[in-house]
Length: 98
Image (tube, rainbow, N blue to C red):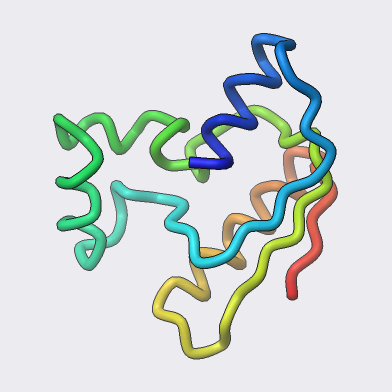
């Protein structure tokens, strides 16, 4: 939710968020079967998982705020978190993984 708000508000030039701390986030609701229940709780249609506001890995917009991404080694979403960090870096965002 924080990522969606940051992305939306940045594009609308309504708010300048200076930093994000992301912990235990899902970045791609389309890919993970284990996230299907979570997806069903928050999205009305399966196709909504393609929307970058729901799945930040689908975003093509640079995150302007410095981002600290907190990952746990045994977390089933660990690799997804690393993928998102790389995605942010490829977009030119500043990201630190802890």
